[in-house]
Image 1 (tube, rainbow, N blue to C red):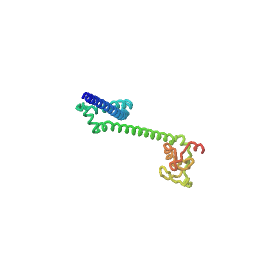
Image 2 (spheres, rainbow, N blue to C red):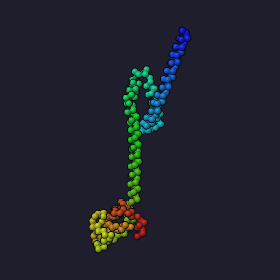
Image 3 (tube, rainbow, N blue to C red):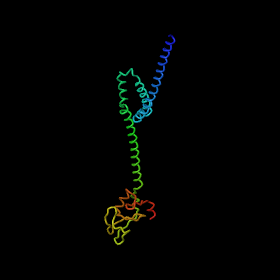
Image 4 (cartoon, rainbow, N blue to C red):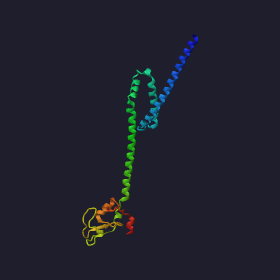
Length: 213
């Protein structure tokens, strides 16, 4: 009887010890999982705020671990905070109200940053293009010009391709180097200030061509 009683006592102690060990192991695993999830979510949230990634990840890890442990504390199930926490976790409220907005905010931040960079690049290209294609007035004045003669149709052109008006006798026209296209002097001068290329063939009018004339 005594031996049987001792076996029962030792078995009971062993089972309680195993239960405690398993409970502790499960708690550690759950806390670790909550910490990992909290680290990711906190890092994302911190990245989108002034807190920063590391600060957000650290706070998220602690919060996730505490939340996971609280789930096992069934003795405190009557506590309003615990009930609210469990209810939020079970119905996905925490995920929808905290993690999802953080991910969405991070996505929008990334897209806005990319869009801003793209806009800056486009603006930079526009200004660069203006600087390259536009011509100085002093350079434009060096381009050849002459009076139009109706009996000498230069390149079979009888009208200006900018204003679509016919050339009149004795009217000043400017001849672009290399391509040889002709336009009203005032029309092409205004054009070249903004675009340093021929309006018809888009051949660039460079100072090199001017010096070669």
